[in-house]
Length: 624
Image (cartoon, rainbow, N blue to C red; front, side, top):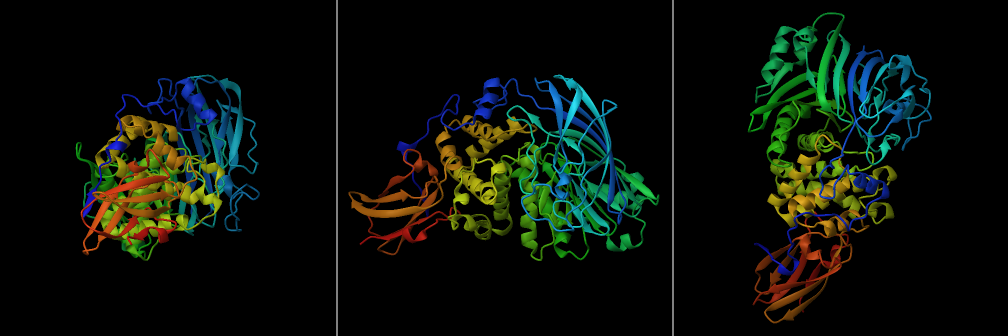
């Protein structure tokens, strides 16, 4: 049986307001708090602000022609208290340029000339720009500085070649394209760092403002377009039968085959103009992505994601008819949308749609995922669950993935295990979590793997994966174990309520979780995020005492983890005593476990479950 232990000496005291005075805070972050844009209780400050853009974008893609043309008008509003003399533009597709800084090597099929500007106007006047540079950032000096609460209008024409090698974006096949990061955008200007000028190195991910988008995609007839947002003109781009099927799917639990392979072969799914203009709208969203194909089949259905309003979200899939796993994508996605909305995080899916597009990236985008084909249908669902879970972090919460990847990947990894438990059972889900997320870290003793989680992601390479995925997920599971599901969810919801649609940083998470839970969690966050600890418990000694036994346990690795003390008695019976991370609050290196029993203990084994131990050989001790 599972028997919890109550340790009154380690009980927490409720606080009226928690102030995070014990956690290290970098000087630039301190300045933001001092300016009043962020508060020590975890709320956005009274002076919090963020900038905003309205993007009207048109792109033309005519497969198999690799040349993509674009034009956009950006109205950028400066809500900061600062006068901006320059703008910083993000040109992510310049990662394909020869000579640009990147983490890995690039083959010939990856390289392209990058973004090529045909026009760049600022308030109607041609701007001097250096578009030829091999960089994913480009500065634009403003002839008239942008004062607080003023707007600037940018009119930009550009073109680029889609790369032959497809990763997060690129050519899937000769007539299937996945377009992401395809437009010049204004970087984030925020309250703690100013302009985001971190280069995109093809490793760490992204940081975007919440903007309003109107996107028009011009594509040849018989090509279907899928994109972030809501399609504004289905009746103009689809033949009536297929527009009707799409509409039916919006209220259907069952999968509607909007366009089958047989339908596509007839070449009469779309309107039969030379080019069709597909118009998409999405407001308060951080990015747009597009998929185009003339031979991908199209499935769709929907799921109720909000029981109060009975709101449904559309789940769609675009894929090769031969990909058996993707024939399950819509129903697997329906389960994801519903489960995430009703369980963990337990926040209604915030967008109107999700599309699973077959590609090679295993990557998330607002309202879209680009996933690779898998022979194992269960593993395909696992990957899709993870990417759909990213809806909440970073897209709903506005995470700076470039600096703090653990703030989104850690949560997606947490949710993947929780939803996996529902789908395949705890045993399989835990085994996959240990094999895929923990094992490679805990058995790799290299220095880079034990750097503190708080280390900015932009400064990591070798330790990036474990610091972003497995280790922060373990911290969430440890905190969930310590607080209990109800209080943990209450605190998580408080954090999400305060910061969705904004730009939280780690200290906002730490402070908010303490404040909403009513418990000072500084010791816990310091243990998990600001140290180079790992997991290694050592059961050193078992002593017979009056009324039972004591067990001396050394925390060699240092992380404050939950664990089970599994006891085998001389009479053959067993008992499991669960210990939450609270046992480590006052001494994170050594504890004495009191075991009250009239029986004779034979052996004790310390078992951390998914909190895998670096050295299991000293986790079991026999009483002699």
